[in-house]
Amino acid sequence: MKAILQKEFRSYLRGNRAFTMLSIYLFILSGLCVLIYAGFNDGGFSDRSDIGLALYVTSAVVAIFQLTFFAPSLNASSLGSERDRQTIDVLMVTPVRRYQIILGKLIAPCLFLFLLSLASLPIGAMALLIGGIEIRDLLIALTIQVVTVLGYGTVGIWGASWAKTSRGAMLATLGLALIMAVGLPLLALLVVGILSNDEALFKSIMNNGFIRNLGVVILSFSPFFSLVMWIQSISEGQATTWTLDLQGALGGGVILQPWLISLLLWLVLIPLLIWRSSKQLQKSVARSSGG
Amino acid sequence: MELIVETHNLTQRFGTHVALNQVNLSIPKGAVYGFIGPNGAGKTTTMRILTTLLQPTAGEALVNGISVRQNPDAVRKLIGFMPDYFGVYDSMRVWEYLDFFAHVYGIKQPRRTSLIQELLQLVDLTEKHDSYVMNLSRGMKQRLSLARTMAHDPSLLILDEPASGLDPRARIELRELLRELSRMGKTIMVSSHILSELAEMCSHIGIIERGTLLASGPVNEIMHDLRPHKLIEIQVVERAMAALQLLKQLPTINDVNLINELADDQAGGKLAINFSGTSDESSSILSNLIGQGFRVNHFAERQSDLEEVFLHVTQGVVA
Image (cartoon, rainbow over all chains, first blue to last red; front, side, top):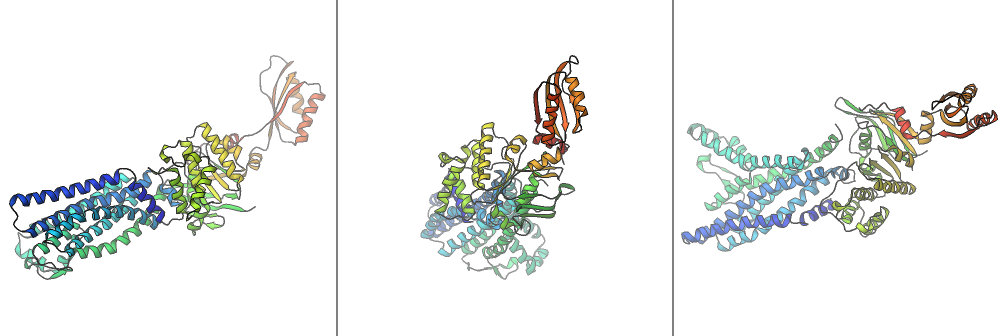
């Protein structure tokens, strides 16, 4: 696996791709932060902590947005390009095990994306210096980013193990990422909007712990949901690291923080997807033998 | 005879399509085995099973006595595989390409560095050490690919259409390289459409069509088995018709024909003899003709070539 990792890194860092991606990523991130800061500056400084929180929110949301789409596409192309270049067969007849190929192909792009995450830390540190957030908030945002990269990256690899070309894999996994990250929260908003017209029905559903918690668990696949729920907690000054206190309208009670649910979900799903991808890789190589 | 490849009733189905039908293949150690067949005959499928890329539907395939089905990891260490295309890693230099595969095969530094030099020397690409792989010519890429298959010093090389798409010079270089590998004691299983090249290079051949192995064994034996009769061409300077009559009476001759048309009975001409006797008996044909006063200016046995055997055995039907 070390050989595959080394090769992947060499190909990432050679040429303009890594530099271009890093530049675009930081340009968008820092540009938006400057706009936020300028916006506050024009309105007059009311509270330093508002600026700190706004910078934190901007940097975290933009980072998550970019990673949500970079992670599956980069991972899908990492494995899919072996098929495009017709090098997968040659790799498969070496003693490297299938799961090692999958892991090598997963870890290299993920490490590159972690590098992007780390590169955005100075903006988060600025927010920390200005005030309004704690170091815990930065760490949680970073955790959500790491989980997003690994989780969505594994989805990308899994998709690539099925697809015939890297382009097909990229499109399929980007679509899936879009559904999970944005589609699920939008669907939840739509359902809540429709249900809230019937107050009795809405309350009965929200009071049903199983349905409500299942909804939260499904929504935790979206890093935006985890992040928004965390930001809401800290902006209301009620943040507790591990649990989320639901308001009365949502049936009340305490549940695990969505970022923690997301972490636990992906801890189970990632090994499962790696295992499935290894199996599928063998099948798809056999399928390409002429079946 | 120690075998490095054995298959027993090897069968491969893709849905209802039978790609391999109970193939029983034997390749002795040290052989250069030419695997011949029309497109879609099952050559690549057999090779993909032997390289563990494909699980057979039924039957067994053994490499050096190890089952490809039960112990694919051990089989992978014994084989070097070159598919019928050359996949290029973009932005990779020649030495990095070999270093990657040597690393994958568990060869550690500093041995890898010296191994790369040895491999490049073997395939005559030493001066391309730092070149990008994608900038090499097709022939060079093919040689580099062959060097890659040798990285872990495998006992068996499986080469699927290695000469495909190469220009004549690159083909000759590749053929010389395969001869060199054969001299190094490697067993080589090679498929190709260029039968004349295989005939020069191979010690053994296998002919496959529609998933069925039609013939397999040493080249000479196959030639003999499939073409038991010799064809002798004779040219007489005069009285070809009389020579024809004489030859028809000889017991060892199965059939004799005039190849060209004769202007008259006294004219000379070419005769073709279908003959099943020994070398002594063929020389007695010549002495018989000379003894009868015929002036013979050409007497030669025509060798059956691989193409002739291939056409004789196969029907040109694709599976």
